Image 1 (spheres, rainbow, N blue to C red):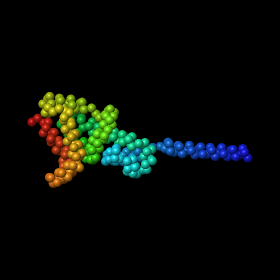
Image 2 (tube, rainbow, N blue to C red):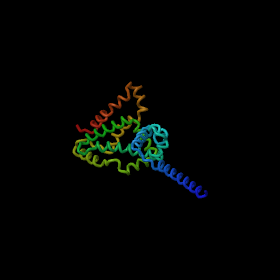
Image 3 (tube, helix red, strand yellow):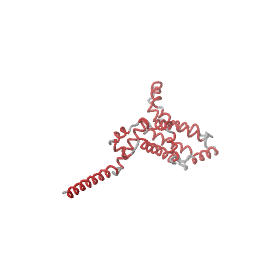
Image 4 (cartoon, one colour):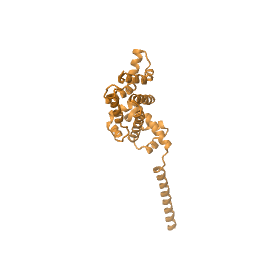
Amino acid sequence: MVGESFSLNLAAKQLKFINFNQKVKIIGYMPKSKDTESRILDAARIIFIKKGLAGARMQEIANEAGINKALLHYYFRSKEKLFDKIFVDVFQTISAGIGEALDPQLSVMEQLENLVTVYIKVISKNSFLPVFILNEMNQNPQRLQRVIEQGIFPSLQGFILQFMQEVNLGKIRPVHPSHLLMNVMGMIILPFAAKPVLKPMIKEKMGIDYDDILEERKDAILQFLKDALTIS
């Protein structure tokens, strides 16, 4: 009887051990789904761009993705890690636009036209993007520095050299290329970043719909650049 009881106890312990291992295997080594991860990243992008790192909550992201919070933490252990992923993705989108626009086979004016077209299109589809970038750069400039160190942004050296060559050939006016690029980015970003302030002001003072102004923005910027750079 003692031996039989011992065997039963041993069998019960082995069964518990097997069940425990199965639970550990299920919980600790559950395969991750690409579809679920994509839904999380899409949801996180929406929430973070609207609210930033400080204002976003993991529960909001889980709700937006249609999953529970525990599953969200299984894929991304912390809000900061998830944010870093989104932050890098945002700048990869931006840098891809720069790389496509600044084609050295084109003239400087053609490259600038491409650059303006690409960024107006990107920001029009993601109207919270300028505020998101500016806020996070102010909150944590080290994060942007880490992105730059990863080599995500394409080099502007080729564009600057080509710009100076066209200046020397008398094709365009002599403007410092750094000021040119800052002016271009400012003309693109500011109208979207300052929309909450400018929209009611323009509507009240001028009776013009601000969204109509934004639709005309690309042509207005390009005309300004042609007037500023072209030598008649």
